[in-house]
Image (tube, rainbow, N blue to C red; front, side, top):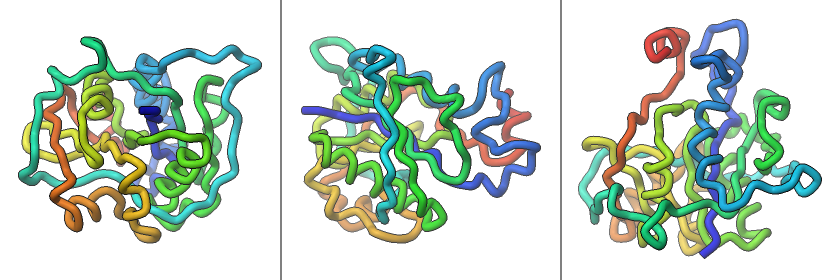
Length: 230
């Protein structure tokens, strides 16, 4: 199975009242987007050469974000999930951008998808990602949010490595990104609005599998959040 790791980074961050977009704010000596991307870079199958770096792809799409609430479901321990005894790795890393240009802080190893319809919400960014993944031949995506710097590589790998068509991380008792979605469920994703995988949690609970993960899924939404967690 070919799996892509996806960070949704297209929103305006309107609740963040700092002097810059929140994803470009300093977070422990680097930008917030760099801190959130670091665990995925550690799980990349192969670092491409500079002249083979994944380029940009213009995408607009209209589909769904990927966070959720706590609930019951098939559950496994993320610490025991892996590939060949190690951590499951990603065949490609994708960052969906929109409201702010992040090119200057993203490494060449990342595929940048520009979502020109980012104002339509998470749905458009997730659809951009799955449309691209389908085009290049990936079988699944594992989707997370670019403002969650405390989600560990182990959590990303555990979700990626678990069997199931919809696999969600569970931190303590709460379903939160990252979420794995195989190509079987991509057609079921909503095509508008600000919800993504949560819609599938409700409409297809029979397909949802939970993976208990290490880490803290805290969002950095405001200046107060940034100050608290730095």
